Length: 255
Image (cartoon, rainbow, N blue to C red):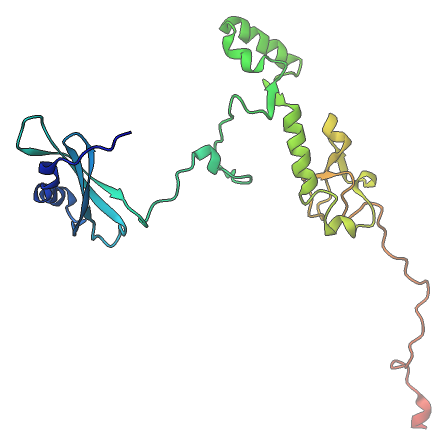
């Protein structure tokens, strides 16, 4: 690709470009001329340094042009652009990518992506519900709710696998100091409330109020010191006599 040739009239329009930048700059300030580049036929952009302390490295870009067979150069555009080493805002991240696990707080609404691979259609039609006739769909929902099949979407195999991975690697999994020092595992503990479905083969919910896992999902090979089979150590039937008697009084000392 052939580089555009700098138009001499556009290259000489430094004062015109500076005047336009000053009118646009307001409180930002316009400093020294940094040069000009050809953008096309009879089109060039002049650059001026910005001396505002809050915009280091930024510069004013003033694009000028000259019409064919015209002698007068006019201003097309004035804008503030970043240069080398300019202070820039962090890269914009979409909202759904900024949300991290555990960010849910009261009043926080997190919409579900229709294509979320963790979910799949349930017995009520799921993703096909919007395509049904409203009357037919209302009847279908009524029947499904009566049968206890009211969830439109359920966990997919991917969703279950992701949950299993998180839970096993978390505090309720088997690989941590709490489990390694526990007297027994959760699968023999009376406080374990089993989950239904395929997840129930690996996990349950702890119901021991004194455990750090109370109300949380724990793997069956997890464990803690609050196991239901732990009993207090047996105390001796008779207390051993003291080594030095500090209770009895020897009356013979006073006779």
